Structures are given as C-alpha cells and as structure tokens.
Image (cartoon, rainbow, N blue to C red; front, side):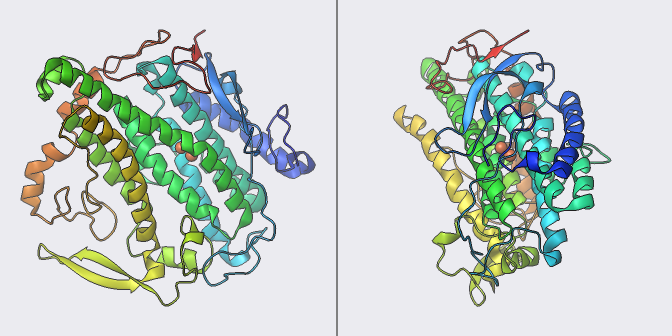
Amino acid sequence: MDSNYQDRIPNNVGLGANRTLQRALEHWQPEFLNWWHGLGPSDFNASSVYLRTAISVDTKGWATFDYVKMPDYRWGIFLAQEENDRRVGFGDHFGQPVWQQVPGEHRSTLRRLIVTQGDTEPASVEQQRLLGHTAPSLYDLRNLFQVNVEEGRHLWAMVYLLHAYFGRDGREEAEELLERHSGDADNPRILSTFNEPISDWLSFYMFTYFTDRDGKFQLKSLAESSFDPLSRTCKFMLTEEAHHMFVGDTGIGRVIKRTIEVMKELGTDDPIALRKAGVIDLPTIQRYLNFWFSSSLDLFGGDSSSNAASYFANGLKGRPDEIKYEDHIEAESSFTLELPNGKGGVREERIPMRNAVNEVVREAYVRDCEKGLARWNRHLEEAGYPQRMTLPSTRFRRTVGSWANAATNPEGKPITKEEFNSHLDDWLPTPDDRAYVHSVMHGVFERGKMANWIAPPERGINTQPVNFEYVKFQ
Ligand SMILES: [Fe+2]
Ligand SMILES: [Fe+2]
C-alpha cells in the first residue's frame, strides 16, 4: 500500500483500512504533541527548519526536504518492504516461516524489547532539548532538529507496533513511553545512559557517534527478529539512523580539525594556550570519548547473558548481519570470555555461544567505532602531528558485565582502585573540562558563520551550500 503524504499520519501500513488502530493512534497523537511542546527542543517550535521527512520506503526517493515548523512535522509509520517467503534466520526455529503475529509464549518478552527500544527514542530528544540555544551554526542547528524529529518518528514506529500487536497492554505501554522522562528522579528512562543530560555540543557529537551507533546495532539485531513487523520497522529506522551517526562522525572530526588549525597557528599543543584561543584541546576530546564510549558499551548488556541466549534460541533478537555467520543455530558452540580473576589479573572462561551474543554484538560495534577514529586520526597524520585518538579497552570504566567496577587503565590492564582514582582526571572529563567546554558554547545563528571551536563541514545538506539558511527564525 502506498503512503499518502497528505494523510494526517503518513504511513505504508494501511492505516486507513484499520479504523480501530487509526483511532488509537489519533488518540495518542495529541499526547505526543503535548510531550513535544513540553520536553522537545526548547524555544524553536516557531522556526522553519529545512528538514527531511520520510514519505515512502522506496530507496530512490524515500524522503523529501523542505522548510517545516517542528510541531507540524509529519511523523509517519513506515515498514520496509515485505520480503517474499522470509524465514527465521537463527536459533531453534531456524528455517520456519517468520511470524506476522506475536506468538503467545513470546508476547511479554517481545513487548519488553519493543518498549526498551522505544524508550530510548524520546529520551534522547529530552536529553538534547536545550542544545539549540548554543548551536555552533545554522547547519548544526538543523542537524540537531533533524535528529530530534526522527527520534520522535522512531518513537512512533515502536508505538505503532505496541498499538497494532499488543492490544490493551500495548496501549498502556505507549502512554508510559511519554510519562517516563530522562533524568526524572521518580520516573526515569529505562537505560541509564539515556538519563545523562547532554548540555554541550561535544557531548552531542559523542552521543550521536557512540550512542546512536549502539542504537544501530540494537536495530540491526531486532531487524533479524522472526517477528516480521518488528524486523521491517527496524530496517526502515536504520535508513534514518545513518544520518545521526554522520552528524557525530563529522562533528567530532570538525572539532579536531579546528583544534589542529589553532595548534599550527600557535605552534603548540599546550591545552592552556589552546583554551585561551577558544578551542578544545585533544586530551579533553579524548576524555569525552572515553566517557561516551564506555557508557555506550554498557548498553549491550552483560557479556554472559541467559536473556540474550533465550532471545537467540527463540528467534526474537539476533546478531546483526546474521547471514555472515556460518552457524545460525549455535547450539553446541562456545565463546571464550576474558574475566577479572579477582587477584589483579585476567582469567578465561568458556561459555555457550548463545550466552555470549551480547559480547559478540559488542565486538562488532567496537570494530564499527574504530572507523571514525581512523578518519579523525587522518587529520592529525596529514597535519604531521604524532597524537592519535584511541578507543579505550572494553574493560575500562564499565558498570555492566564481568568488568563492572573492576579498576583498569584505558588499555584494559587491571590496576588497584587507588591507582584508578588517582588517574581519573587524566582519563575522564573533569568538572574543569566540562566548565571549559560549556564556556565556549554560544549560539551562532548567522548564515554561513561557524563557532570558533569547530571547522565548517565539507558540504551542506541535500546538495545545499554550507551557508544555506537551514533555519529561519520567526
Ligand atoms: Fe532512533
Ligand atoms: Fe538516532
């Protein structure tokens, strides 16, 4: 069924033919808009923003670009094209037809998986709600709002599944997605990373690079699901998600590029001199990176997990790009974990492969993260500097899994708690770092102008020039 862009809720799920579902969603929509006005981007709701809107799932023309006031954004519901005769790709039901309805025995688990994913989407909008005021350019302001409206659409995507497939409890869960709030002491978002406020743009770029990338891997794992509507929803969300990570990747790259320029001008890499010149020194960028990378690693869950094993066995949530693995059943295979031995060293333990799915996905994520570092380090290499950005070890500063609260250095070597504490200021953003980074954040809203601490992007959005009027204020 084709979507109609003019519909109140653009969709390709045949909403017009399902009155009950349409009514449920039309009831939820004003609550969503209330939430957007109260906890979405602050103070820019009257501005016209050059935004991308999903209008179909056709890979050649799935979106249009135009000026939109954010509250008028058309949050639609899109599922990727149905695959002919799609089969369960992994686990105990391998090779059987996929499910178009929720099997009773997996109902509560699937609902939980959908709610947990859905909860992160509005959470990130809440975390970022004040950032617009300090945007380094109109280009960046527009990108922030693009990310925000699309996270809003991802919430719609999960709410659609809850309404369409989970009846009354699904509708209740959909309401609660608007009732939990990021950082709320009484009713916080489900995952702790999504309760950290994002109040500066360096954190925003780190978030979109590292945390949205966790989102990519979660979506890819759910795109493998035997519950076909979930799979198709997540496949389409990935199309939008790519731009969010692009914002982080190029954002961090531009910060580093600008710092290098000033290092050259001043002939020094001294953080004090660089801060005097108003740019962000490389060690501070590295400390932010250490913080956001380690916090995002926790989102994958425990390294040995019976939940992950049962999701895999039952075909609910798999490994990204399952087709690339040789064994899709993994009933007999095992995985070797490295764990702290409690005496300051490391020991190995063999666990069933199915229990190690979180760790396998986390490893794939780390490899994906490294690509950005290679790009950023190329700037340093080309400028003739020996410094390099590095990813800390997956053992470093973890709060989930076998390495939770085990003291290690960023290379992953176990150390004493005292040693760890004595190095905290070298490894993680200090209150002083945060205060400095905040001090350079001022909104730059003149066409084509950039804040001093960041280089301009190489190109604009949708073939528009960098100095395009990406946001028109009212
Ligand atoms: Fe998202
Ligand atoms: Fe995202």
